[in-house]
Length: 193
Image (cartoon, rainbow, N blue to C red; front, side, top):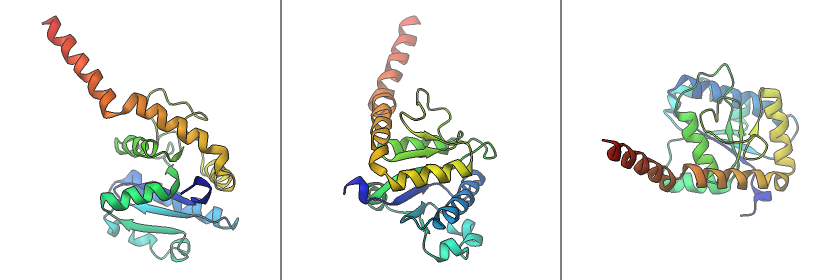
C-alpha cells in the first residue's frame, strides 16, 4: 500500500508495566483531542494482558472504535499491522520512568519504516538519532497531537523522516552490525589476554 492511504497509528507494549499503561492513557487523551478535528485515523494498541486496560474499555473514544486493543498477536498479524500503519507512537514523557522496552519498541518501529513520533523518553539510549531527521520529537501531549495532525494530513511530507530513521537503524542497530561490533570487542579482549 502507498503511505498516503495509511491512517493507522500503532503502539506496542506489555500492558502489565506501569510506563506502558501511562502511555496508553496518553494515547486515549491524544486520540480524544484529535477525534474532535474529524481526522480519519485509528490507533491500534498491541499487547496484553487486556485485564490491565479493563478500566479503559468503556472510554468513549474506545467505544467509538478510534482506539482498539488487540491484545497479543501472532508474528504474521504484527507484520500486517506494521505494513498498514503510518505512525509508531511512543508517548513517553518525563512522567514515565525509563525502562528497556521503549527502546525495543522504537527499534522495531524504525526497522518497519514507520514514522516514529516520540516523547523524550521513548528513544532515550538509542545513540545518534537526530530529531527532525530520523524521528519526530515532542515534549508534551499538546505538541504530540499537533504533529500527529500534520502527519495524518500530509503523510508524504514526512515519509523522508521515516526512511531516514529506518536507514539509520539498519546501518547502526541491525543484528549484523551489532554482532560484528560484539565479535570485534571479544577478539580485542582475547588478543589482550
